[in-house]
Length: 167
Image (cartoon, rainbow, N blue to C red; front, top):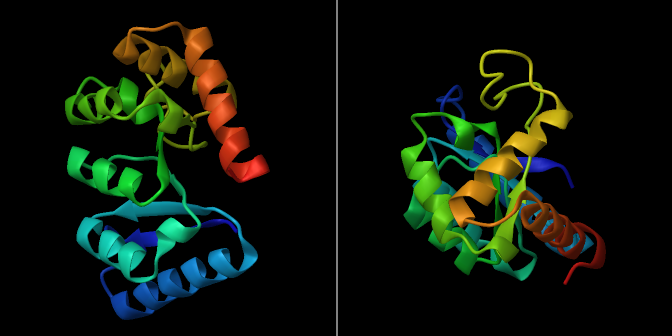
């Protein structure tokens, strides 16, 4: 289905058009029985409001490159969504995001690079590459007090469950 959602950071005009496109995308995902990949930035309340109104929980999906609050994570989990963490979780100022990752069960976590942006430490400020996803896995392992291998297995299983088997 591709990525959808609301981004109010750069897009402060034509918000109702953006909201309608988001609604349309949720409807299409439900019709096609494909999970949603939701991006949200500076649009927390509207994102959840539309997800609930359009019954996005019926199809589920992933909250891509998650940088929101614990409350948003809880609401997203309740709506049948996985939480995906990027290199941002490795940043020194990502305390709130670390708290979110600590809360989210390992069987509901995905990891990503969001290349070419948001390279993890120690590559912050440089072009991100898919091979850097291991740094995200290492940080999740540290937060969860488990091995990188356990994170790799869990997140791979989560990916397959969401995008391949649809269970």
